[in-house]
Length: 359
Image (cartoon, rainbow, N blue to C red):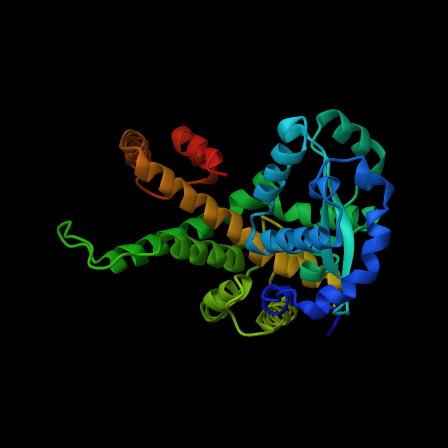
């Protein structure tokens, strides 16, 4: 089971203790003498003592676990760099090597200067291995460029707007309509009466987007999604039972194998579960497929759910934008009283621009 990691419910809650730090001490002397350490800006260039290396590792690793590493990097760029947000910086990190509990001390070099980024990317770019403990050698974490290229070529077919997504739009819209009705029921609005209890819209939107990923892109049955939706979201934020991410992924794979004959990428036959249609061609669960299932369930719902949450937050602060958006939406439904299509969304430019601005 070691080849199928479950980072979310096993490692995300792990805090460094003295035993971890003691394992790091033999690594520090060589690390301090690394040539690049004194050539790039960063917290260790100012203070490369053992104590500061440990402190910086702990601080940066915690920021990664909280999902705010980008803010920490920006802080370092302004504090230690000389080119603002275009400064290249070096940050020490701890990585848990696959199948071990011993942290490995290494550096991340954040290349932000456009000239340096272009020069390095021409011949040396490949994926960073830092996501391997989470999603194995999936499309975002494999360090083998040929392997990445093969995965990208295969999975890209599931997201082609005109060939795939527009044919899924009707089912996706029906799910969204049912979610709107659920929200109305929870609001219990009768003659515009006041809301009895507050609703966590972020949780509501994450549940909606998780349902869309599972039902539309993976082609999971409704009872499966109803049973796993909240559980997998709790696992992703570190609150679920230990090992559930792995359990969920195996369950998805089991559903794919049982229903693989139903999944389809042919619009003439009826597209169903495009991601499952691609990854289900294999009879054995590979580590890359394992990782890509987790990736689809996590990244597929997390980014969209939080983007929509942020959109609502911004709109709540500016009533004039709310009125303009409501006017655009009212006109849209007036022009499309029946079923809408994928191409109809082009008639919502104000909404589209605000969604893009919320990313």
